Amino acid sequence: MEFIGLVNYALFMGIFIAIYALLALGLNIQWGFAGLFNAGIAGFFAVGAYTSAIITSAAADGRIGGFELPFLVGWAGAMVAAGLIAWPIGKICLRFRSDYLAIATIGVAEIIRLVIKSEEALTNSARGITGLPRPFGDLPYVESQAAFLLLMIAILFVAYLLVERQFNSPWGRMMRAIRDNELAARAMGKDVEYRRLQAFIFGAALMGLGGALFAHFNRSITPEAIDPMVATFLVWIMLILGGAGNNRGAILGAAVVWIIWSVSEIATDQLPHEYAVKAKYIRLFLIGLLLQLVLRFRPEGLLPEPLRGDQGASRREPKSSARV
Amino acid sequence: MLELNQLVMDFSGFRAVNGCSFKVDEGTITALIGPNGAGKTTLFNMIAGALKPTSGTITFQGGDITGLPSNELFSKGLVRTFQIPHEFHRLTALENLMMVAPNQPGEALLSNWLSWGRVKAVEKDVEAKAEETLEFLGLTQVAHERAGNLSGGQKKLLELGRTMMTDAKLVLLDEPAAGVNRTLLRKLEEKIEILNKERGYTFILIEHDMEMIEKLCDPVVCMAEGRVLIEGSFQTVRSDPQVLEAYLGETVGAEA
Picture 1: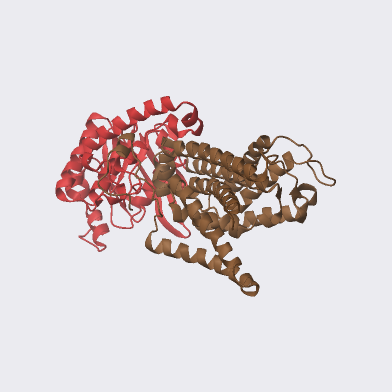
Picture 2: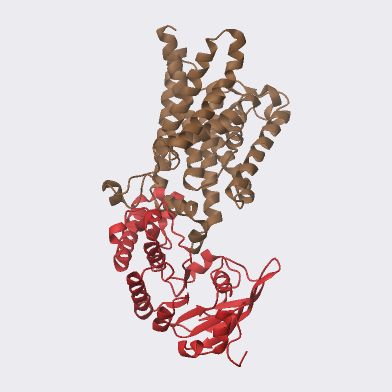
């Protein structure tokens, strides 16, 4: 590969890492801090992607849309829509214990995928929505990619700050307490159902934003993009590997897993054609193996949940290390 | 202050509490005793809002609180501890106390983004109060330790400490002495007494440690098979043959 190709590849990878990092941050709010087992990330991702697509795309026959609003409006709309969808889902499902919540959310994500696949008037069904505006899309290719990456990094940075602030606040402390012991948190006066719903919606909004960014980066969105493998389970692996309960861990996990995922594709593409097709499945195996190894040898992830406490405690080095 | 009226709790056919009634006066330390399976903890769970009674009513400070969730009871000043410590194990001991403080502005998402200064100011007060509480309990040296790493006795103290972070009126202690060594136990008794006398807490405690009960509690309520067997001073209850019978499960003396 020549140099410019490598640069392009790196930019492309960076953009995807930033988008996935947003999804992992959203999941970290839900799982890392509130202990909610959301296995339907793809659903919120899809709602965000399609909402922004409908808001910003040009008019097309037989489909609602044609609002042609700026992409920023689309992105805000994506967050709102994903949050709004999360509200009734959370209202119904959050009363389940964590494993049942996982089953319920998988089901909901599948419903969303099927609606998108079949509702032509809403989503143009299998053909998807194309021609989405892309920020800096008029620049030459490499510059356009670089500018988009910078925008992604800026968005990720702002999201990180907003989330990190909550985690270091009494809100974060309360969420972690609810996660650790629901019964005691309720006995200490916390409205557990309401707080869980808050965390669920907050996380879902970030997932919706991730979906919207993905759609605008590709200038299109089709039902194929809403694959539970890449939109849900890959994000889970990122968070677990990076360190649930740690925002920097979530971002690091997104980077590590995406690099392995994407480089392994290059590796398998080098093989002769008849093997290359089969080797695709090796990538899934590789990711699964990685998850097993992490869970066996470092269950707290690369960057474990920090011991928080008061502001003073973070400066002092506590006696017990961060290991649980 | 607290009045239980004909409380019944059925667990799909099994009646754990069967028509239980008694009153608790303000400022007292009431002991709830009885053999295992008498329904003491179930009764506690109903008072504290963790279980909804099948029938009967609970009145607290003149208001009906039957079936209210425990977070609402907390704001009315009714706080509990657990038989098996329910610490927030991945939070530090200090955080375990700080999270209890009611009406924290930092528990609203928006104020953390928009009025961080105010959140931090309140946080400082909460922290000072939590540190003071840890000192009162003698837990200062483990303030920044994960609560899950504390010893069983320290967790019990932490449970008691959580009740001190709010303006509690009635505190339910479920076996505060179980698994606590003698030295720590004396300390615990002392703390309960101070809280009762100086802060005006009313206590109900489930306990098997008779020494502790004799020292602290008046009246004593003895339960058996889901009902109140007898109620009175420690001496009265101890010398009652029905109580012996309930504990030993056999007929003792002529009365039975």
